[in-house]
Image (cartoon, rainbow, N blue to C red; front, top):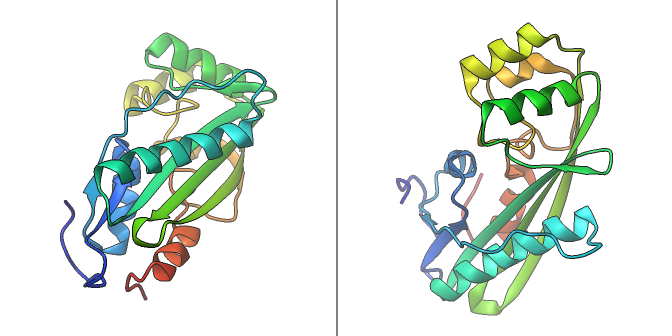
Length: 203
């Protein structure tokens, strides 16, 4: 559980982040609110002919709903992110060879990241949902740069094989986004508003 820096409303027992991602946990820590982390363990496979936006919305909702069952009378945050190059969904590489292949295919190309958030206020059975879209334009990369980057940062648990919040920023030509935190996995600008509406105290 995160350290308490600001009080939360007395009518809410807890704030729950339905995610195992350390990056989302770090982002939510920015708000200075205490929260519990729950790994929902849902099936993240896409459905037949499912559109990317529908997929990311559905997975964020499923994560939030799974955590809400475990923690009733809570405010639950579910989030999911899907990266696409053209019509191809990019997963987490898991290994160096796959990471090299992903970055080679990204060289000079645009990667689109759809990041969904689903907030459930259990007390009132209220749901709020949002998707933020970020477009990353990669510069032309050479093999040595790709190999050096992967060796230095080891982005094997990141969709697209890079960490934008760290050294991965050097791979880009441009980022187009409404919320810079969305690319890391949790759009804090929208989420701050949702938590205020749920009764949490934020600046």
